[in-house]
Image 1 (cartoon, rainbow, N blue to C red):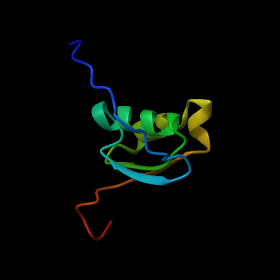
Image 2 (image 1 turned 30 degrees about the horizontal axis):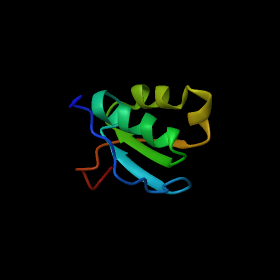
Image 3 (image 1 turned 60 degrees about the vertical axis):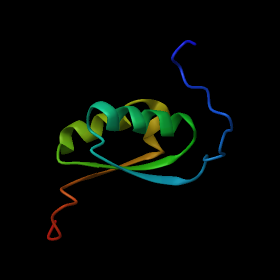
Image 4 (image 1 turned 45 degrees about the horizontal axis):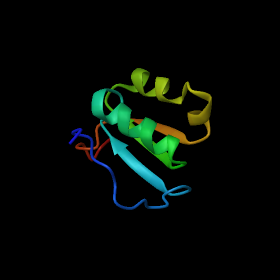
Length: 77
């Protein structure tokens, strides 16, 4: 066993929209990249607005990623 999971089925998620919180770094950044590669439109949010902008740098991501800096735990933002 190689330790790599193989999906048993593939969902067609192209054209859908996903909200990714904590998108500016680490796991969130990887999730955004994976979703964009599958043709998903992504709304990416994080406290780090400057780091969020870099999510739109790859040409494939420019039309698919919308960045919204802010803290979703605070109603007033």
